[in-house]
Length: 406
Ligand code: DI6
Ligand code: FE
Image (cartoon, rainbow, N blue to C red):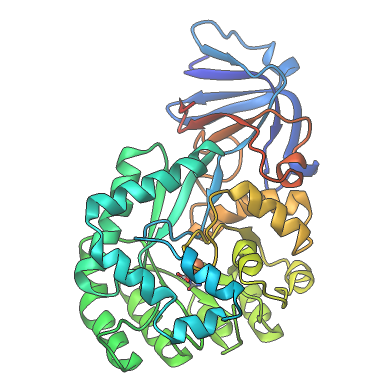
């Protein structure tokens, strides 16, 4: 066979969309890779019919292999941290109040502007290491703590450098519309500046593949969201939005109808938003880390999303204010305990459905022939353990595009 490498004696949680088996399970299986792609997979019995000489063989010794994990929503590039704000919240202040008093996102904007590009790269690389150790092979990273030309571009360059220097693919999202920068007093003027100046430059220099916006009382209103997302689409960028996290402004329906790949948070999502997402094939990205850390009480409408067959992804939302998370596996546990997803739905949320949220579903997120060979190897007895354990990392191997990372 013209295979480059072969993994044998593995249990595969393929997460294949059309498999009848839970987790797309293939027990006692092998998986073959050629030029970074999966070219064959099947049982050890089926493998016996092939001549596997001159193929690099890796024995998984009965361990489990899943698609490499995908974190489809993160803000890992930032200066400083907000532990002091955490203390304030424990003394009774709310996230909203802190944001309105110049803390919150704006505090991180100040620290991010003050940090050099090298410092931002180093601190983001440190955070990234925790994710890589859990078998994450693709990650979305947002700007949004610069809020002016110089610092937004600085963040996007750091995102590119993370991809260049680490064995993972990064989807870069321009989140210039994360908060109103201190230099502006009018959201409309800031959105106009983004649409007329910064967004065209980001698109032209290919510094981002997607555009995001925080549509919220403490962020931007629906009209501003619409203007920005329209401008982004016109420039050929993918669109997505933070909507319905703390209140329902009607942003979900609007952004879904504009063709958003994903809508994220969604605690206050209503029936019209769900219907629009269903019609448009929009992915619902659930962020249990932020729900937990802000001690929110309103659950995203999971049963309705499930009933409407809206694909659900799970992500870390790793950021210094609302989800200082360094573990995607912990998010699986929280998605199950807090949101009542099944462990299989949770794993689909960081593989197949996370790939859809990035528009990468033809390449990653499932183990099947023709997909990129991005794989995580687990020392577990059953894939439910990935959601079940708290604070345990059973990842013992990681393969990116057929290359062994560890
Ligand atoms: N929603 C969030 O949860 C984060 N950003 C956003 O739009 C919070 C970011 C922060 O508090 O720094
Ligand atoms: Fe976020």
